[in-house]
Image 1 (tube, rainbow, N blue to C red):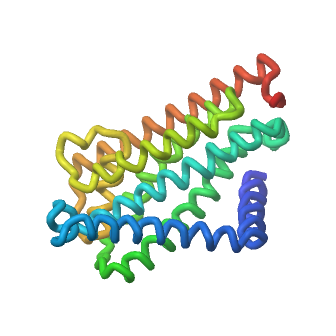
Image 2 (cartoon, rainbow, N blue to C red):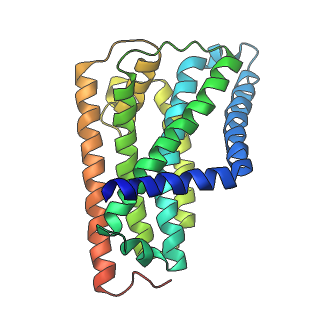
Length: 253
């Protein structure tokens, strides 16, 4: 039965992508143009370009890929819960076998794969366009997985807010705007940044996609951080779900 539920989520996502293909392409193009325009703007700040700002185009692009993955995961899960909570249709998902939480996790898995694919479709054209050389190390899937699990935990935590407060678009917008300067501050990675949220996963992804070796301490910290984020997100979602059901607020909007 679990396989059928997972397959139904795959079919739903495929049908949505196929039905709204124009919007999907527009979103990909928007991401490419956003980063390319930002690079052009930074290049024109000084006659020497990015070098005078102490920035390298390669790490900048890879941090943008990490930003795209985290924000994409956050949007796909948290916004899905928010839209259904605002419409009062979350109880429909709650009727699925295994309940709401299991169905949301299956949906998160499918949309996470879609988010990874989307990030790759944004990263590769930009790398070709800007002349950035990628040399993925054999362990790059592990770095991607750890960053995704941390992003998934954060998305579930934000989804718990949507489950309780229903309309939280303004707060979600603030979070996304804060993410932008935060992630780009990780381009110049320093040891003191290691414990910061998403920092070890982002740095590992940078190292993995440039062919460098992984640092065991950084790998361990990224693993622990991913587990903490995922555990906190699952706990928040389960606790809020139980609270809104107990108070009869699940289907209200």
